[in-house]
Amino acid sequence: MPDTVTQTTPRPQSDRAGAGGAATTEHFDVVIVGAGISGIGGAYHLTQQSPDTRFVILEAQESFGGTWITHKYPGIRSDSDLYTFGYRFKPWTSAPIASAAEILTYMNEVIADNDLARHIRYRHKIRSATWSSADNQWTLEATRGDTGETVRISANFLWMCQGYYRHDGGYTPEWPDMAAFKGRIVHPQVWPKDLDYTGKKMIVIGSGATAATLVPAVAEQAAHVTMLQRTPTYFIPARNANVLADTLRELQIDETWIHEIVRRKILFDQATFTRRSFEEPDVVKNELLAGVRAFLGPDYDVDKHFTPSYRPWRQRIAYVPDGDLFRSVRSGKASVVTDDIERFTEKGILLKSGQELEADIIVTATGFHLNVLGDIAFAIDGKPLAFSDSVTYRGMMFTGVPNMAWVFGYFRASWTLRSDLVSDFVCRLLAHMKAKGARRVEVALRPEDGDMKLLPWIDTENFNPGYILRGMHLLPKRGEKPEWQHTQDYWGEKDIFPAIDLDDRAFVYG
Ligand SMILES: Cc1cc2nc3c(=O)[nH]c(=O)nc-3n(C[C@H](O)[C@H](O)[C@H](O)COP(=O)(O)OP(=O)(O)OC[C@H]3O[C@@H](n4cnc5c(N)ncnc54)[C@H](O)[C@@H]3O)c2cc1C
Image 1: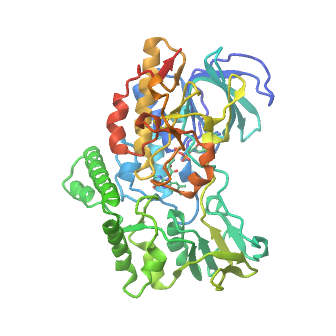
Image 2 (image 1 turned 135 degrees about the vertical axis):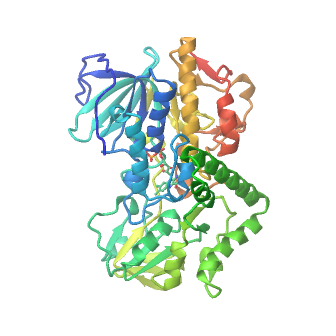
Image 3 (image 1 turned 120 degrees about the vertical axis):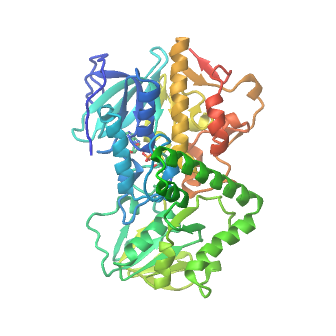
């Protein structure tokens, strides 16, 4: 994998030694934070739409990929289709649900085809970002993972592509007596290379996409694997194939066309599904459960183990390609237990029902730590930024935070759909600033927004994943009007974003 640290036209600005020993400050027009799918996409769009921009991507890890390099647990794969999780500009040519390795290969091609490696600096963990209104620029301090050295970089514009969770470790709740367990406890986000589960009894705690991926992936080799969940989740078992794509390929249609047509079809079907899940939730629920029953047979207690109490689509629904989770359960290699944990024991887990599950290995597929702005200490003119005091403009800019945009994708649709849209917006904003001769742009509530009610970042009636609920107090506020919120609506935003009036009073230039 490429690991080039070549810089683009650096401009040393000062020779002051920083607190951590940084000797010089290099300057760029734009710094992209993170070399995940969003950061690499952002870099591509910059080179295409704003080719004169001097930019660098700073990435804490040793290679690109973000989510797809961080997670190394068995079976790691996408839970949405790659026709829409893939970029708008690069056709996806394989089965819709992809392994992390396939996604990394795809991203590597984007980097190679567009000569992006020279813009990326790996092993650069940004610790602080300070805005100076006197200079109209950000100064970042990053620690190099290889040398421990502090590097200082300044930038006119900060493009936050750092994702939404902490990459160095996952979230594990504290259960009573965890220390009593004699086996090994593992979080999937930090899967140990040496973990040998051959012939071992395993418990996977969790009911989300990670648990659903892990269980069938380890079931063949393990003695037995139990998926232990407090409450069930919806899944969509489906063949890992796209009939339309396969037909178009048989007809020897160009892959660029196939990509576009299949994306439109998937997006259309998803929009219909989302609309129906609001309009006729019971019908949709029954359809989803029928899919599960088809794999598990009439005697399986689908009501208990796979029938959530919430409305479909309030949490992301993962695909179960070829029903592999359900096949493992049907074969007896895996089982599902729906119960609460009373405490850990020497041998495993004691449940509230009194049942004890024995295990050699317990995997806690219990989620993430929300990571707001990359755990970077932000300050504006010397004052620490309280991000939760700001109000978001369309989930990508924030009041009181100049020259900065954040990519926060969709929950219900593929993340990358939004990272492409935000990229177009950022490139347009940068061009607009250049045309106006502006060095600073900030969003601000307009006089007509004076009475607008301010609300938490997300409507938990609409969507309520655990990591958001745990971290809501850290996130910016949204307003009642659509321009002051992340609407989670790709179908609306795909038309609204390109039409945003950059001279609206919400944008204040300087
Ligand atoms: C297991 C798993 C499966 C998923 N599957 C899907 C899916 O199928 N479809 C979907 O739409 N979404 C999925 N998601 C959500 C997924 O995270 C996003 O879709 C997407 O990969 C996020 O890309 P990103 O580039 O925005 O952020 P990330 O992939 O999180 O990458 C952010 C990068 O920024 C770097 N970074 C962060 N802070 C700093 C800092 N201070 N300094 C320097 N670098 C920093 C990180 O090291 C990381 O490499 C999945 C998430 C997980 C965890």
